[in-house]
Length: 150
Image 1 (tube, rainbow, N blue to C red):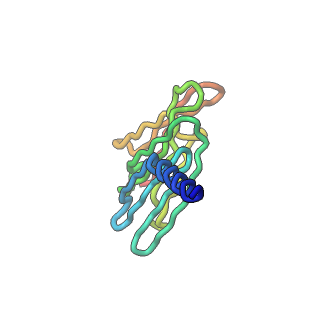
Image 2: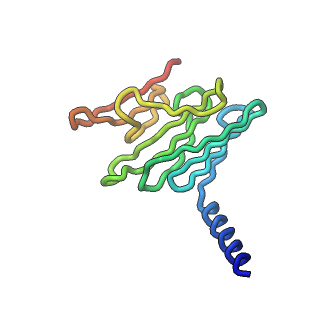
Image 3: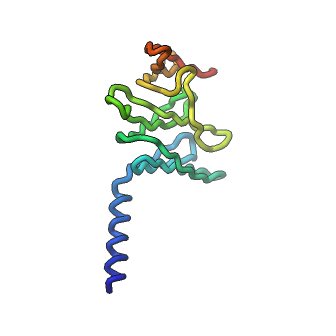
């Protein structure tokens, strides 16, 4: 009887943890479905199409809450995603990791900025088709513009 009670308790706990996961589903391209499951600092990415099915896990080093954002970050007409957080220090900056859909592989690839170590205080300039972020050089904040081939 104790085993049954323990098993039911553990199942209840697992269900509760799953219930707190943030699940996002979107279509990056025609006939391609992506499901993102964000649990704490772990993101599970599953991509399904008629020809391809793949899933991966991405770990984040974050103390603050993570958020998912869907957009076309490389301006190619396909939906991509970013995971962002407020910095773990004084909470002054937002930090994005951007993943763009690659139709050749059927999966997402992490995008790096043209300067600096990451996308800090990201702005999406759809008119100029550029990602604008902040980086530091000799403790001086500078603007980084990341553009994509047309």
